[in-house]
Image (cartoon, rainbow, N blue to C red; front, side):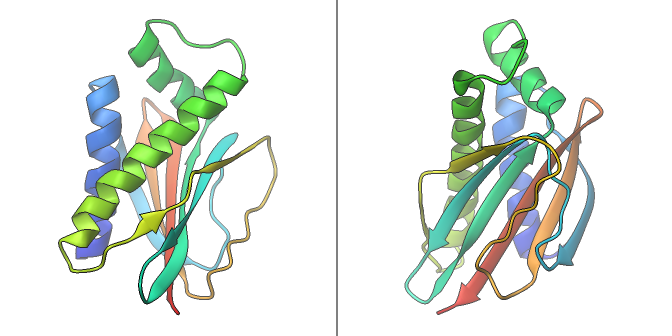
Length: 154
């Protein structure tokens, strides 16, 4: 497996596995240009480095995020609230941080913005990346968790 894909996969498994006791299973990965599966809650962080910029996107189906929150707090939320959105942003932030630590070992330090949250159904994300996006689709207890990563040279 490509070292970049491995670093992304390990970062998702580490963070979600620690909090749920069950790491998600990588089902599929591909490169695409901006179109990828989106759950009802998506966290988007901008990435920047000395010679690169990009995006780190984590998208949860409502059911997957609710399962994570149930593992954390003992009960699942009934609906998407501000607290659920904050939790999605924090999960994405931790996954991004775990990835950035791995990426820095390759000699490329990155900074990340605070994640922005998008909720709803049937929406599309358009990052400013011109390069293809690496998309990893995971399953957590039968529910979607997707990660999108892109990086362009400045």
